[in-house]
Image 1 (cartoon, rainbow, N blue to C red):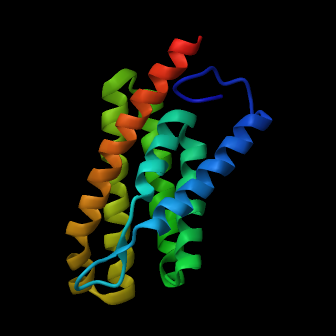
Image 2 (spheres, one colour; image 1 turned 45 degrees about the vertical axis):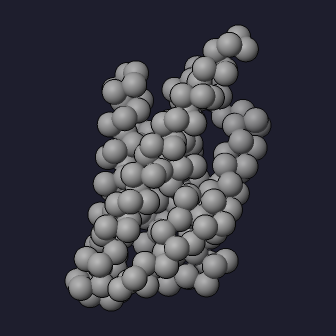
Amino acid sequence: MSGQLGINKGIQTKDIVLCGILMALTTVMTMIVQIPVIGAHGYVNMGDTVVLFTALYLGKKQGALVGGLGSALADLISGYGVYAPVTLIAKGLEGFICGLIAEKVSGRAGRIIGTLVGGVIMVTGYFIGEIFMYGIKTSTAAVAANSMQALFGIITSLVIYTGVSRAMHKSE
């Protein structure tokens, strides 16, 4: 395992498998609850929890892969394919930047700052993408819902990370 909880020993098979499982979980968590945004064309979901957790647990590269590919796949499967390119970039950057900050700033502060900045990047990414897709009015209408989604993902990912971290340290 690489990233915050372990020592980077190169890519191992278990890391690839775990990344694949987390990518699939991101897709499922994005699809399982989809609340349409009034006045916009997208939906609110719970996928950010897995994206941010992955970035904290495995690191920036895996956070980017899980966030970008897992979330874009959910868009494609759910009939929101028009969002897939924006999602790939916004969620990929969310995972990458969260993981990068968590790696550079040690401890709890790094995790909190990383998830907050990751959430802001996700909201900003959709805001910019939707301006080109639908115009400023629709893009602005989605900011509140995307911010709530980010906040939910930030809180839940930090709680899950803390629980997993404690469980991993007890088993050692």
